[in-house]
Image (tube, rainbow over all chains, first blue to last red; front, side, top):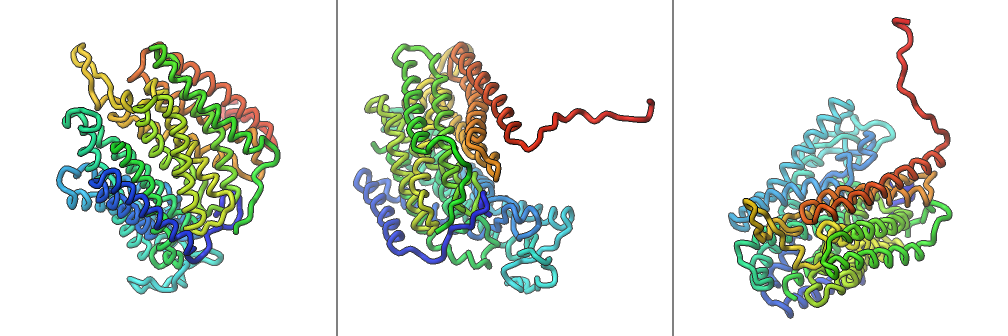
Length: 276
Length: 287
């Protein structure tokens, strides 16, 4: 599904040297944060966990891309960047709205926001597939649905990798939305706590005046980091995945390592904004 | 290792484009600083021109990166560019506390470091094994941060953190300083983010294919950039004086009109055949 028709590059397996370097980046970021401002160590760990949740969650989401739009592959007919932005940002906004009610309520609201958006998207995708395009849901990667036990072989069209959105992909989509929504909200909450604490002393302003500023800064950083983690995951699964039953799902460790390093670096810069 | 597929023959060398894009964008952003030096606001439009120059360069970087099989669509490269670019750009505006002249250069340096880390992760940790990936992701992060910085400078007339977080609201004719009505506090950044992202991810996505040609893709980049610049000019009405807004708006409209007509000319040149379609005439009936 490359733009110009070339084969997808992503190989299997983990590159040990690069993974160690990525973990060193995480540790160095944590070390710099601890050295400059010990209080920001816990928020930075929260940001990294948020990135890991996003990256792991996106692997569950059934991304079909262009082949799915033509009914030649299962999944939702768009790319990871759009799906993750939709599901994750819906979760992020849900969580941001509940931010004043404590971290667990906010995380729950974020997770529900992301999960709800994916549930509605998956439902409407299947409505369009079944009633508008006239194709049944059939997975191309497994013969039997791992949850319901339905067989797919009789419904799969010749020359396709399956089509529609099978039950296991629907469940995967909702789980992915929940994880990604919670991850995005966690990044937002951790950055918000740092800014609300540090901005008044750094900029010499009243705490009342700067709450909108802290919310805006944390929000735009959370959106940026969310997209970075989601796109890195998209590169890992090389564009399309059917859900948790897809063999590509087993690639998640390296996306988790990569996203944690990326979020550590971006999170460190975001926290240094108020530290130096 | 993935196979490279040549997107288009000819065109300017990428290193030359990198030089023009980097230097041009930096010079234009520095020209916005004339606002602070001369206590005026009319030089804000240079920020938009800086963003267009950066987008022009970034489109070629995306083309180089997407010549290899990414597996996912072209827009993802634009999203990672702006997503990491906004982090670098916001941090760089804080450097204005040391010296405002450090902001644009600091923005490039921080974005390049962040981009190199992200490029390394996608190339080596995620096993993409694309030779140009580290360099192109680093370039795209710089492009994303320069686009954000340019458009932010255009909307606010300045690029120092202190000015970006304070705005003034008028309550019953009395001016009150307010953080909520500033560029960052009002989250105008989110709109700038999407306007920049659309402008960087669209040109190559729209022009790719067997018949892609360098000048048409680059003209599409200028066209998308000026289209975003028009919207930014309208948004700057909230922060700048009317004369500065009118100047920005007129320049953006002229740039867009010129680039759009050029793009249509180039599209007609590259098309196999061009049919100026007419409205379908109803024949028969009353005749």
